Amino acid sequence: MPSNKTLLMLPGDGIGPEVMGEIRRLVDWMDRRRAVGFDVKEDLVGGVSYDKHGTPLTDAALDAAMTADAVLLGAVGGPQYDDVARQHRPEAGLLTLRKEMDLFANLRPAITFDALLDASTLKPEVAQGLDILIVRELTAGVYFGEPRGMQTLEDGTERCIDTQSYTRDEVERVAAVAFDLARERNNKVHSIEKANVMETGVFWRKTVTDLHARGGYQDVALEHMYADNCAMQLVRWPKQFDVIVTDNLFGDMLSDCAAMLTGSLGMLPSASLGAVDETGRRKALYEPVHGSAPDIAGRNAANPLAMVLSFAMALRYSFGLGDDADLIKQAAQNVLNRGVRTADLMSEGATQVSTTEMGAALLQELDALAA
Ligand code: IPM
Ligand code: MN
Image 1 (cartoon, helix red, strand yellow):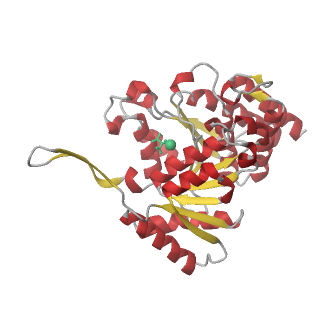
Image 2 (cartoon, rainbow, N blue to C red; image 1 turned 180 degrees about the horizontal axis):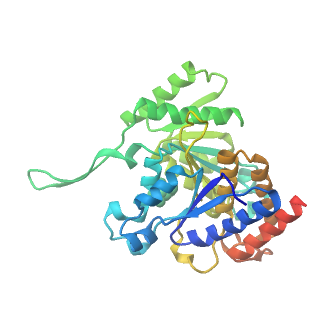
Image 3 (cartoon, protein in one colour; image 1 turned 90 degrees about the vertical axis):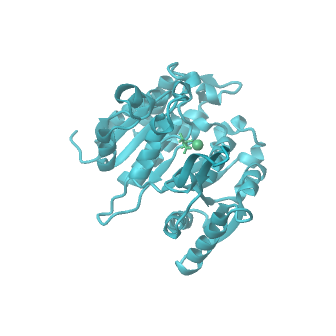
């Protein structure tokens, strides 16, 4: 079906192409059963792009990403690129996309599915009903701060620098996203930094406090917490959190931690969003949090559900198709309730399936739900 909804698929490396394959089937299903057509394009990112073009992201792929309504990315990276210079590494392709598309707000929801409670390393009463949203700043901080790199001092000493840097606007815009999202949830935001040690931590805390008081967000409960304490609290009693807003590096670490509370990194989707423009559009990229998992790549063993849930986030945030997003989430939940599990989620009594079998089970469930 011809469509004005453009979707760019960047499967990338490792298990990326395998999990993206299940999205193609889902896109076909949406067309057939929901009369929602997408104009799908595909390109390379990461190591596969480096192998073919000598760069992890070509200008053409970046152009396609800039103009698509939504970008779906599988994963980037692999051990064969460990010795490649940093600007040519697979990760550089992803970081360029984030920076050039100005995707400053990275939403990483950590939600426990009841069927997977036994997969969590936490006690069931600690993990059950967990629903946290981490809002990670994604285009500034130590990931992009200058100066960076190696120096040799006059006495010959080697020195290496990374720079943590934030402007007021960079903090305010991501905090505003967190406050707005909290209003649709349990109205509570924890702002995370290291104000006890870092200048940028003091600035982060002050800026978030100012925005809260003067930006019309007093109805939202705001608490501040140091990042180390937050890591501890996440495994101690995660249900105290609703929305967590934090910088790029702390967000990277805390979201892996929060992901594992739910049982498997293989379940976690993410949305990276830009600002809303005059026409109401916002650039967006959706990707699973799990990464390329080279150890299981090519074996039809990966869990496609994080990619599937990332596609559901695209339906919700980029295409205004919240009902379809809910349907997909429900289908995933039903499949898990039936004991269907990829290897990462396996537990006693469950049925182990491959990537494509999980995708097929999901479509079957969707057929039943949409009937
Ligand atoms: C993530 C990843 C990336 C990051 C890597 C692949 C550059 O770990 O999205 O969490 O560090 O941001
Ligand atoms: Mn990460």
